[in-house]
Image 1 (tube, rainbow, N blue to C red):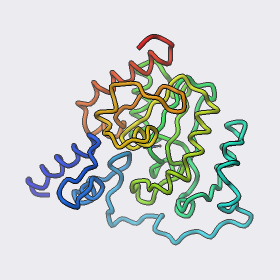
Image 2 (cartoon, protein in one colour):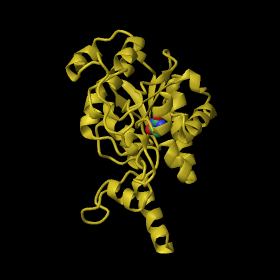
Image 3 (cartoon, protein in one colour):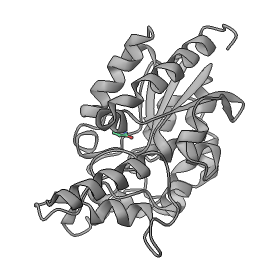
Image 4 (tube, helix red, strand yellow):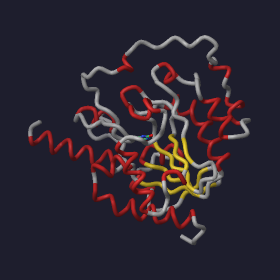
Length: 266
Ligand code: URA
């Protein structure tokens, strides 16, 4: 990559991670910009570049397993009516509510303490999560674990999940129809968990949960509300891996999270 291209890539990447999604140039949005500079990799606001590597998700859609539920068989009402996380998780396995069911390896429902004070919400499973069925187990996940621990929460103490329960092919950005189809699972998860506070990691999770287009840079720094639960937005750990300077704001956000979780005044 030439020096000019490298600088342009760095500039665009920073604007994307600051949460900008308006035109970079006429007809160039954040997603396209990221693809052009080859900066898409796992995680929110910077998911994978379309590199010419073999990808198992290029395989043709798998036919539905015999006896698998159809779209109509998991209506939103069935999700809302679940009475336990276990029941909700079971229901989500084999979910056919959007086309990601054709490319995923497995549903990544979420995991952790069912009596957690803190629920962490990320964007969507990446390759490692899709393979293992567990949320936040890649590089970003390892950093998330360390960040949580730095404010006194072991991974096992909190509950971790994503806005989308299935991996978008090649880590592309989640689509509105996928978000809409998956949303009832997250709403019910939070209703059943009744945490003291939700941590929204990254632009995508924060904007989706708060139903806003405001950038993460503007959302973070204050406490919001999600279905009656205080919500603290912060930068995604994957973004932090690329921008160590964001360590301080993330630290401040996590301190705020801890105070709310412990019932101290913010
Ligand atoms: N892994 C997840 O489970 N979620 C993310 O948002 C990123 C990585």
